[in-house]
Length: 450
Image 1 (cartoon, one colour):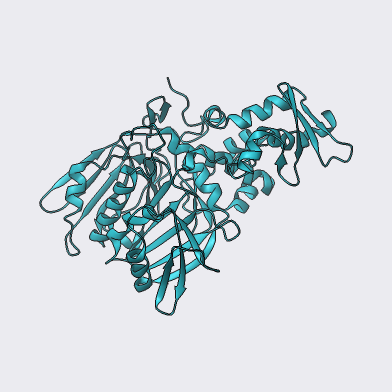
Image 2 (tube, rainbow, N blue to C red):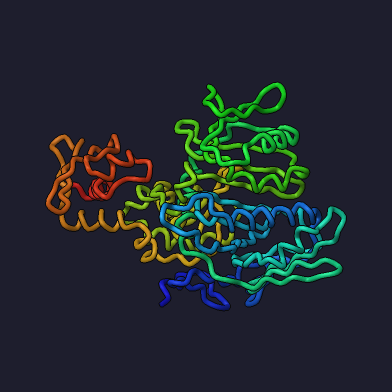
């Protein structure tokens, strides 16, 4: 059963992207190259200037995506997916994965300076990093020629002796949910620690290789200190064992930038700078918390116009590696706040990601399916039902609301983001608002009718 394809007003596909119970199969969108319509495009066809860097980065992605850093009680470790999502933006290539437990996201950025002898195209697909390809990549040296061909149906990696071809495969639907939450969570992050290559190597070598709940990292005169106890001004790294795949890059690092929400200290992002490339690992607040289960986008999607606005914006993205909300507002005539809400909706369906280093959205081509977004966000569906049932009753001063849900009423204080329901009392808003808070937010658009 197909749940969704690209909106009719978007670019046509040589084959349809489909979303069903088995996963998400991605097709490459034509018609977006500088030369015009290309019904069977290739993302890139040429050589890599830093073959060992690219090979080791792909192995980092493969290690992340096959690893489960947390297994819930009474649950056997399921087989891991190994399906990087490749996107070509005309000026760079990106490859993205999640760990098997969904608590780690990883992204490889390969810029034009890392590529030689080919033009970067436009499009998105996903491929499996199979065992044979990984074996081949592990033997790549600095001075070895490495040819890369990324197209709508395959990725070829060739040396003078061997060629390995990986065909397009499906992608877990939970990755789509995780893409959206990662984008929204990391929008609030800023740089908190910047290390040169030497400091970066010392940091990765000092991180515990055994499972430790948390460490704190702080710059020092000798480079960096790693402590098992909280230190004022230090960066909290939860579940640091999740950064172990980066040890593959020790001899290649030129620097590391660490990002975090300075207020909460929850989660962390580490961007590793490399010759001709960058690889970014993001850790959720705890290994037991997968990105797909966060509700970070719910508030932004609580608008009556957001679906129509998202459909409009989807036609304007053009595989941009750096989306400007201000330009989108100018081109579409939408107010900036509606553009931000629509981008949140597009993020929820995986169509836009967040580049934390550039502090900007970027486009990846996945089907935008509002119905699937609704299925993935049942609290939002429940909130809309409460509004339709006129279950939100405001106080005279409009500062609080009683929301009738089932046989009970819950008091909501929107300005404080609090509710008297069990969900809020358990999570304190750390996993997004409850359906009662969302209902209150939705009803503010039509308070006179409620």
